[in-house]
Image (cartoon, rainbow, N blue to C red):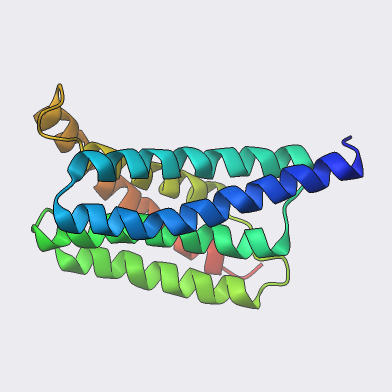
Length: 177
C-alpha cells in the first residue's frame, strides 16, 4: 500500500503524461502532413510509450483520477486516428475501414461519458490499442530504415487484426451487464 502523498504524486504524473500525449497529437499531424516520417515515427513511439507509462503509474497508485480516465482514451483516439486518416489518403487502407474505427471510437466514447467511473478499458480494448500503435509504427517505418518493406507489410496485417479486435471489443463494451 502506498502513502497518500505518493499515490497523489503518481496520479498527477500519470495525468501529466496523458496531457503531454494529447499535446503531441498536434506536432504528429503536422509532421505527417509535411512528410516528416522519421519525426512522426518518433512522436508516435514516444506517445505509445507514455501511454504504457501512465497506465503503469495509475496501477502503482491504486487507481487514477476521473479526469485522467476520461482524457486517456480520447488522447489515444487522436494519436491513432490522425496517422490512420493520413494513411487512408495514400490509399494504404480503404476509407470505410477508418470510418468504421472512428464510428466505434465515438460510440465507445459516448458510452464512457455516461459511466460514473469513466468506464475503464477492457482487456480486448487495451490489446486493440496496443496492436494499433504497433501497426502504425510499422506502417510509418521510414523508407531508409532496415527492413522497411517487410515491416510495413507486417504493420498492414496487424492493422487488420486490430480492426477485427476493435469490433469485438466494441461488442464486449456494449453488451448488457
